[in-house]
Length: 133
Image (tube, rainbow, N blue to C red):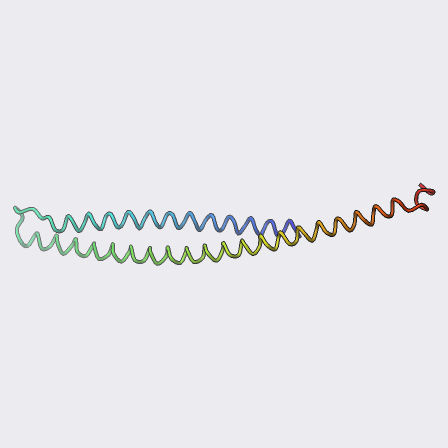
């Protein structure tokens, strides 16, 4: 049973590690998209003076559309990040509970081992047992 608890604990630990990795990946992607968004906004404000007005407007509209899409993607990723963080906190709490359970079971096992040793020790000091042995 201790082995099963350990396996469950190990599985939860792996799950937690996976969630942390996913969280870091999401944070990297959010940072990248924010940088791209800032770059696109700067590009949008700086236009070449030689271009005709229609071309400038088309490019600006295209960039604006892409900025809106990137903003939406950033918001979506931040929502996912929050969701992963909540799952991570829940997993950490569950791991903590399992650690406490495992510690109490270890204490229980040690107590039972002590009782068994005490019984075994009294059986070994039994005079009748010594005569037959």
